[in-house]
Length: 369
Image (tube, rainbow, N blue to C red; front, side, top):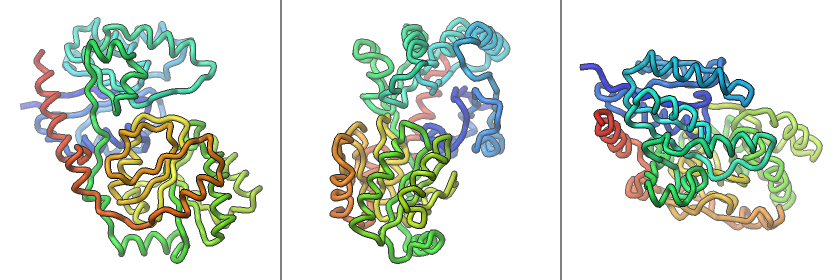
Protein backbone atom coordinates (compact mmCIF):
# COMPACT_ATOMS: atom_id res chain seq x y z
CA UNK A 1 0.00 0.00 0.00
CA UNK A 2 1.28 3.46 -0.91
CA UNK A 3 2.09 5.78 2.03
CA UNK A 4 0.06 8.91 2.64
CA UNK A 5 1.98 11.78 1.10
CA UNK A 6 2.08 15.00 3.14
CA UNK A 7 3.01 18.25 1.40
CA UNK A 8 5.37 20.37 3.49
CA UNK A 9 5.56 24.00 2.31
CA UNK A 10 8.81 25.87 3.04
CA UNK A 11 11.09 28.55 1.63
CA UNK A 12 14.17 26.38 1.04
CA UNK A 13 15.42 23.23 2.77
CA UNK A 14 18.65 24.66 4.15
CA UNK A 15 20.00 23.99 7.65
CA UNK A 16 17.69 26.44 9.40
CA UNK A 17 15.67 25.80 12.53
CA UNK A 18 12.30 24.78 11.10
CA UNK A 19 13.98 22.84 8.29
CA UNK A 20 16.09 20.90 10.77
CA UNK A 21 12.98 20.22 12.85
CA UNK A 22 11.19 18.85 9.77
CA UNK A 23 14.13 16.61 8.92
CA UNK A 24 14.33 15.37 12.53
CA UNK A 25 10.73 14.20 12.23
CA UNK A 26 11.10 12.96 8.65
CA UNK A 27 13.98 10.62 9.53
CA UNK A 28 12.00 9.06 12.39
CA UNK A 29 8.61 8.67 10.67
CA UNK A 30 7.35 5.27 9.57
CA UNK A 31 7.73 6.02 5.85
CA UNK A 32 5.64 2.98 4.96
CA UNK A 33 2.73 4.97 6.39
CA UNK A 34 3.74 8.61 5.86
CA UNK A 35 5.92 10.25 3.21
CA UNK A 36 6.97 13.90 3.11
CA UNK A 37 7.07 15.90 -0.12
CA UNK A 38 8.26 19.51 -0.23
CA UNK A 39 7.07 22.64 -2.01
CA UNK A 40 10.01 25.06 -1.91
CA UNK A 41 10.21 28.69 -3.01
CA UNK A 42 13.75 28.98 -4.31
CA UNK A 43 15.39 27.74 -7.51
CA UNK A 44 18.71 26.92 -5.85
CA UNK A 45 19.36 23.57 -4.26
CA UNK A 46 18.84 23.28 -0.51
CA UNK A 47 21.27 21.56 1.88
CA UNK A 48 18.75 18.81 2.66
CA UNK A 49 17.53 18.20 -0.92
CA UNK A 50 19.69 15.13 -1.59
CA UNK A 51 18.65 13.51 1.68
CA UNK A 52 14.97 14.20 0.98
CA UNK A 53 15.23 12.49 -2.40
CA UNK A 54 17.11 9.55 -0.87
CA UNK A 55 14.27 9.09 1.66
CA UNK A 56 11.70 8.96 -1.13
CA UNK A 57 10.48 12.53 -0.95
CA UNK A 58 9.61 14.76 -3.90
CA UNK A 59 10.59 18.41 -4.30
CA UNK A 60 8.43 20.90 -6.19
CA UNK A 61 9.93 24.31 -6.97
CA UNK A 62 7.86 27.48 -6.94
CA UNK A 63 9.02 31.07 -7.51
CA UNK A 64 10.00 33.32 -4.64
CA UNK A 65 6.91 35.05 -3.22
CA UNK A 66 7.04 38.76 -4.05
CA UNK A 67 4.30 41.42 -4.09
CA UNK A 68 4.91 41.96 -7.81
CA UNK A 69 4.21 38.34 -8.71
CA UNK A 70 1.16 37.60 -6.53
CA UNK A 71 -1.20 37.11 -9.46
CA UNK A 72 1.06 34.71 -11.38
CA UNK A 73 1.96 32.91 -8.15
CA UNK A 74 -1.71 32.34 -7.26
CA UNK A 75 -2.29 30.87 -10.74
CA UNK A 76 0.66 28.51 -10.29
CA UNK A 77 -0.72 27.38 -6.93
CA UNK A 78 -4.14 26.62 -8.43
CA UNK A 79 -2.48 24.73 -11.27
CA UNK A 80 -0.35 22.74 -8.82
CA UNK A 81 -3.24 21.56 -6.64
CA UNK A 82 -5.34 20.70 -9.68
CA UNK A 83 -2.48 18.51 -10.92
CA UNK A 84 -1.89 16.92 -7.49
CA UNK A 85 -5.18 15.76 -5.97
CA UNK A 86 -3.27 13.14 -3.95
CA UNK A 87 -2.50 15.63 -1.16
CA UNK A 88 -5.08 15.47 1.61
CA UNK A 89 -2.80 17.19 4.13
CA UNK A 90 -0.86 20.39 3.37
CA UNK A 91 1.41 21.64 6.17
CA UNK A 92 2.70 25.16 5.52
CA UNK A 93 5.65 26.71 7.39
CA UNK A 94 6.03 30.06 5.58
CA UNK A 95 4.37 32.14 8.30
CA UNK A 96 1.93 34.76 6.95
CA UNK A 97 2.46 33.62 3.35
CA UNK A 98 0.88 30.31 4.34
CA UNK A 99 -2.44 32.07 3.74
CA UNK A 100 -1.81 32.04 -0.02
CA UNK A 101 -0.84 28.37 -0.27
CA UNK A 102 -3.63 27.20 2.02
CA UNK A 103 -6.15 29.38 0.16
CA UNK A 104 -5.31 27.52 -3.04
CA UNK A 105 -5.43 24.19 -1.18
CA UNK A 106 -8.87 25.11 0.14
CA UNK A 107 -10.15 25.95 -3.35
CA UNK A 108 -8.86 22.55 -4.50
CA UNK A 109 -10.75 20.77 -1.72
CA UNK A 110 -7.76 19.72 0.40
CA UNK A 111 -9.39 18.75 3.72
CA UNK A 112 -6.49 19.24 6.16
CA UNK A 113 -4.66 22.56 5.76
CA UNK A 114 -2.16 23.31 8.54
CA UNK A 115 -0.68 26.78 9.08
CA UNK A 116 2.40 26.54 11.29
CA UNK A 117 3.93 29.58 13.03
CA UNK A 118 7.65 29.44 13.76
CA UNK A 119 8.29 33.06 14.82
CA UNK A 120 6.98 35.53 17.38
CA UNK A 121 7.90 38.67 15.41
CA UNK A 122 9.36 39.77 12.09
CA UNK A 123 10.36 43.32 12.92
CA UNK A 124 9.43 46.33 10.79
CA UNK A 125 10.68 46.82 7.25
CA UNK A 126 9.38 47.83 3.82
CA UNK A 127 7.61 44.47 3.46
CA UNK A 128 5.38 45.10 6.48
CA UNK A 129 2.26 46.22 4.50
CA UNK A 130 2.43 43.06 2.39
CA UNK A 131 2.90 40.90 5.48
CA UNK A 132 -0.14 42.50 7.07
CA UNK A 133 -2.11 41.86 3.87
CA UNK A 134 -1.03 38.21 3.88
CA UNK A 135 -1.96 37.84 7.55
CA UNK A 136 -5.37 39.44 6.94
CA UNK A 137 -5.88 37.01 4.04
CA UNK A 138 -5.35 34.05 6.37
CA UNK A 139 -8.99 34.03 7.58
CA UNK A 140 -10.31 30.46 7.34
CA UNK A 141 -7.81 29.22 4.77
CA UNK A 142 -6.20 26.97 7.38
CA UNK A 143 -8.30 24.20 8.88
CA UNK A 144 -5.72 23.59 11.64
CA UNK A 145 -3.33 25.89 13.47
CA UNK A 146 0.13 24.82 14.67
CA UNK A 147 2.91 26.77 16.39
CA UNK A 148 6.28 26.10 17.97
CA UNK A 149 5.14 28.00 21.09
CA UNK A 150 2.05 29.74 22.46
CA UNK A 151 3.59 33.15 21.74
CA UNK A 152 4.31 32.20 18.14
CA UNK A 153 0.70 31.08 17.68
CA UNK A 154 -0.74 34.32 19.04
CA UNK A 155 1.66 36.42 16.95
CA UNK A 156 0.62 34.92 13.60
CA UNK A 157 -3.00 33.94 14.18
CA UNK A 158 -4.11 36.45 16.80
CA UNK A 159 -5.43 35.83 20.28
CA UNK A 160 -9.07 35.55 19.18
CA UNK A 161 -8.33 32.87 16.58
CA UNK A 162 -6.18 30.95 19.04
CA UNK A 163 -8.97 30.96 21.61
CA UNK A 164 -11.72 30.13 19.11
CA UNK A 165 -9.95 27.58 16.91
CA UNK A 166 -7.25 26.24 19.22
CA UNK A 167 -3.55 25.97 18.43
CA UNK A 168 -1.51 22.77 18.56
CA UNK A 169 1.98 23.40 19.93
CA UNK A 170 4.27 20.99 18.09
CA UNK A 171 7.55 20.79 19.94
CA UNK A 172 10.76 21.40 18.01
CA UNK A 173 12.03 17.98 18.98
CA UNK A 174 15.57 16.68 18.48
CA UNK A 175 17.30 13.32 18.53
CA UNK A 176 18.19 13.40 22.23
CA UNK A 177 20.63 10.48 22.08
CA UNK A 178 22.67 12.17 19.35
CA UNK A 179 23.43 15.14 21.62
CA UNK A 180 24.42 13.29 24.78
CA UNK A 181 27.83 14.27 26.11
CA UNK A 182 30.87 12.42 24.81
CA UNK A 183 34.31 13.33 26.19
CA UNK A 184 36.18 11.94 23.16
CA UNK A 185 34.11 14.01 20.71
CA UNK A 186 34.70 17.08 22.89
CA UNK A 187 38.46 16.57 22.70
CA UNK A 188 38.35 16.18 18.90
CA UNK A 189 36.27 19.32 18.38
CA UNK A 190 38.36 21.46 20.72
CA UNK A 191 41.51 20.30 18.96
CA UNK A 192 39.98 21.19 15.58
CA UNK A 193 39.16 24.76 16.65
CA UNK A 194 42.37 25.24 18.65
CA UNK A 195 40.64 25.57 21.99
CA UNK A 196 41.99 22.83 24.21
CA UNK A 197 42.38 25.06 27.28
CA UNK A 198 40.06 27.97 26.42
CA UNK A 199 36.61 29.12 27.50
CA UNK A 200 34.55 28.41 24.37
CA UNK A 201 31.33 30.31 23.74
CA UNK A 202 29.23 28.91 20.92
CA UNK A 203 26.62 30.48 18.67
CA UNK A 204 24.72 28.86 15.80
CA UNK A 205 22.51 30.90 13.51
CA UNK A 206 22.13 32.53 10.14
CA UNK A 207 23.90 35.87 9.77
CA UNK A 208 20.86 38.13 9.56
CA UNK A 209 19.42 40.99 11.60
CA UNK A 210 17.23 38.71 13.72
CA UNK A 211 20.21 36.88 15.25
CA UNK A 212 21.78 40.13 16.50
CA UNK A 213 25.40 39.25 15.71
CA UNK A 214 26.51 42.86 16.11
CA UNK A 215 25.55 42.80 19.79
CA UNK A 216 26.93 39.27 20.11
CA UNK A 217 30.38 40.56 19.16
CA UNK A 218 30.07 43.41 21.68
CA UNK A 219 29.26 40.86 24.37
CA UNK A 220 32.21 38.69 23.43
CA UNK A 221 34.51 41.73 23.46
CA UNK A 222 33.39 42.40 27.04
CA UNK A 223 34.01 38.74 27.94
CA UNK A 224 37.43 38.72 26.28
CA UNK A 225 38.50 41.92 28.03
CA UNK A 226 38.00 40.11 31.35
CA UNK A 227 39.12 36.67 30.20
CA UNK A 228 41.69 36.82 27.35
CA UNK A 229 41.67 33.01 27.25
CA UNK A 230 38.17 32.96 25.73
CA UNK A 231 37.09 31.97 22.23
CA UNK A 232 33.89 32.61 20.27
CA UNK A 233 32.74 30.01 17.74
CA UNK A 234 30.07 31.03 15.23
CA UNK A 235 28.37 28.49 12.99
CA UNK A 236 26.25 29.54 10.02
CA UNK A 237 26.31 31.81 7.00
CA UNK A 238 24.34 34.70 5.56
CA UNK A 239 24.55 38.10 3.94
CA UNK A 240 25.69 39.92 7.10
CA UNK A 241 28.66 37.65 7.71
CA UNK A 242 31.21 39.91 5.91
CA UNK A 243 30.14 42.88 8.05
CA UNK A 244 30.55 40.85 11.24
CA UNK A 245 33.94 39.55 10.10
CA UNK A 246 35.00 43.15 9.49
CA UNK A 247 33.84 44.22 12.96
CA UNK A 248 35.75 41.34 14.55
CA UNK A 249 38.89 42.40 12.71
CA UNK A 250 38.42 46.07 13.65
CA UNK A 251 38.16 45.12 17.33
CA UNK A 252 41.35 43.05 17.08
CA UNK A 253 39.51 39.80 17.85
CA UNK A 254 40.16 37.83 14.66
CA UNK A 255 42.45 35.29 16.36
CA UNK A 256 39.83 34.75 19.08
CA UNK A 257 36.78 34.18 16.86
CA UNK A 258 36.12 31.17 14.62
CA UNK A 259 33.73 31.44 11.65
CA UNK A 260 32.91 27.82 10.78
CA UNK A 261 30.23 28.38 8.14
CA UNK A 262 27.40 25.89 7.62
CA UNK A 263 28.10 22.57 9.32
CA UNK A 264 26.35 19.22 9.38
CA UNK A 265 27.86 18.08 12.69
CA UNK A 266 26.04 20.38 15.13
CA UNK A 267 25.70 17.69 17.81
CA UNK A 268 29.47 17.16 17.79
CA UNK A 269 30.30 20.87 17.77
CA UNK A 270 28.16 21.43 20.84
CA UNK A 271 30.27 18.92 22.74
CA UNK A 272 33.18 21.32 22.32
CA UNK A 273 31.34 24.38 23.65
CA UNK A 274 31.39 25.50 27.29
CA UNK A 275 28.35 27.77 27.00
CA UNK A 276 25.80 28.70 24.34
CA UNK A 277 25.17 32.38 23.60
CA UNK A 278 22.00 33.51 21.78
CA UNK A 279 21.01 37.22 21.95
CA UNK A 280 18.34 37.18 19.20
CA UNK A 281 16.00 40.13 18.68
CA UNK A 282 13.06 37.73 18.26
CA UNK A 283 12.41 34.01 17.83
CA UNK A 284 9.62 31.45 18.00
CA UNK A 285 11.06 28.52 19.89
CA UNK A 286 14.47 27.90 18.31
CA UNK A 287 15.43 24.31 17.54
CA UNK A 288 19.06 25.20 18.23
CA UNK A 289 18.22 26.03 21.86
CA UNK A 290 16.60 22.62 22.28
CA UNK A 291 19.75 21.11 20.78
CA UNK A 292 21.96 23.10 23.14
CA UNK A 293 19.93 21.86 26.11
CA UNK A 294 20.10 18.30 24.80
CA UNK A 295 23.89 18.74 24.78
CA UNK A 296 23.61 19.78 28.44
CA UNK A 297 24.89 23.31 27.87
CA UNK A 298 24.06 26.35 29.96
CA UNK A 299 22.56 28.98 27.62
CA UNK A 300 22.66 32.75 28.05
CA UNK A 301 19.90 34.15 25.83
CA UNK A 302 17.84 37.29 25.29
CA UNK A 303 14.61 37.71 27.23
CA UNK A 304 12.79 38.41 23.95
CA UNK A 305 12.67 34.61 23.57
CA UNK A 306 9.72 32.84 25.18
CA UNK A 307 10.33 31.19 28.55
CA UNK A 308 8.71 28.08 27.02
CA UNK A 309 12.23 27.53 25.64
CA UNK A 310 13.52 26.55 29.06
CA UNK A 311 12.72 22.85 29.21
CA UNK A 312 15.77 21.89 31.27
CA UNK A 313 16.41 24.73 33.70
CA UNK A 314 19.59 25.58 31.76
CA UNK A 315 18.41 28.96 30.36
CA UNK A 316 19.66 32.31 31.66
CA UNK A 317 17.47 35.11 30.25
CA UNK A 318 19.06 38.57 29.96
CA UNK A 319 17.51 41.78 28.66
CA UNK A 320 18.89 43.28 25.46
CA UNK A 321 18.64 46.63 27.23
CA UNK A 322 21.48 45.53 29.50
CA UNK A 323 25.04 46.46 28.54
CA UNK A 324 27.48 43.96 27.01
CA UNK A 325 29.34 44.11 30.34
CA UNK A 326 26.27 42.83 32.20
CA UNK A 327 25.95 39.98 29.70
CA UNK A 328 29.64 39.23 30.12
CA UNK A 329 29.25 39.00 33.89
CA UNK A 330 26.42 36.48 33.47
CA UNK A 331 28.61 34.42 31.16
CA UNK A 332 31.73 34.54 33.31
CA UNK A 333 29.89 33.52 36.48
CA UNK A 334 27.97 30.71 34.79
CA UNK A 335 28.35 26.95 35.09
CA UNK A 336 30.22 25.28 32.23
CA UNK A 337 29.35 21.68 33.07
CA UNK A 338 27.52 19.54 30.50
CA UNK A 339 24.50 18.26 32.40
CA UNK A 340 22.61 15.12 31.35
CA UNK A 341 19.18 16.50 30.37
CA UNK A 342 17.97 13.56 28.28
CA UNK A 343 15.28 12.38 30.69
CA UNK A 344 13.93 15.92 31.09
CA UNK A 345 13.69 16.46 27.34
CA UNK A 346 11.95 13.12 26.81
CA UNK A 347 9.53 13.83 29.65
CA UNK A 348 8.69 17.27 28.20
CA UNK A 349 8.08 15.92 24.68
CA UNK A 350 11.25 17.11 22.97
CA UNK A 351 12.56 13.73 21.80
CA UNK A 352 12.03 13.14 18.08
CA UNK A 353 11.28 9.43 18.33
CA UNK A 354 8.33 10.00 20.67
CA UNK A 355 6.93 13.02 18.85
CA UNK A 356 7.33 11.47 15.37
CA UNK A 357 4.86 8.76 16.34
CA UNK A 358 2.39 11.40 17.52
CA UNK A 359 2.77 13.33 14.26
CA UNK A 360 2.35 10.19 12.17
CA UNK A 361 -0.92 9.39 13.94
CA UNK A 362 -2.09 13.00 13.53
CA UNK A 363 -1.47 13.00 9.77
CA UNK A 364 -3.16 9.61 9.35
CA UNK A 365 -6.19 10.72 11.36
CA UNK A 366 -6.58 13.83 9.21
CA UNK A 367 -5.89 12.27 5.80
CA UNK A 368 -9.42 10.90 5.53
CA UNK A 369 -11.52 13.90 6.57
